[in-house]
Length: 185
Ligand code: NI
Image (cartoon, rainbow, N blue to C red; front, side):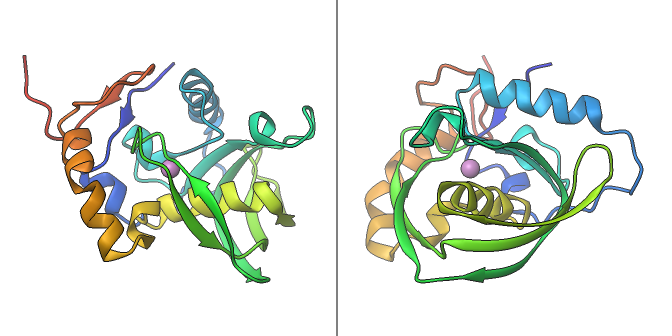
C-alpha cells in the first residue's frame, strides 16, 4: 500500500516518536514504507512522513551511490545512534516532506547505530559516507527534527514563502501528498 506523504507543517513531523513493542508484526508496515518510498523516488522514509509517530525508518541508498549496486536497503526499528564521529561535511539534502527545497546540511561522516530489523534481530553497525548521511536525516525525523531546522535564520527567511506554500499543498510532486493546510475542495 502506498501512503500519501505528509508535508511540512504537519505536527506529526515535529513530534518525538514512540518505540514499537518488541516482537510486534511490522512486516506489512515496513513493506508499505518501502513501496511508498520507491513510489516517491526517495532514498529514505521515516514513519512520521506517513503520519505514524513510530521509531521506524527505511532507506535504500542505491540511487545515489557512486556505483550502482553498492546501495544499502534496510529497515531500522527502534534505532539508537550510539556515536557520531569525524569532521562534519556539507551535503545538499532534500526531503519528501519538503518538496522542491534542497540545502546544504553539515553532519558527521561516521555513525554507530543500534537497531532491530523487521524480524526483530538486534544489530549494532557502523555506517559512513552517504549511507550515514541518509540514516542521520531519517533518524532526525523520528526525533521530530527536519533538515530545515539546521538552516541559518537568513536561509530560513529566504524559503519561508516556499515552506508556507508546501504546507498548503501548493507544490508539484509526482507522488501523493497530505498537506496540513490544504483547502478542502
Ligand atoms: Ni526527510
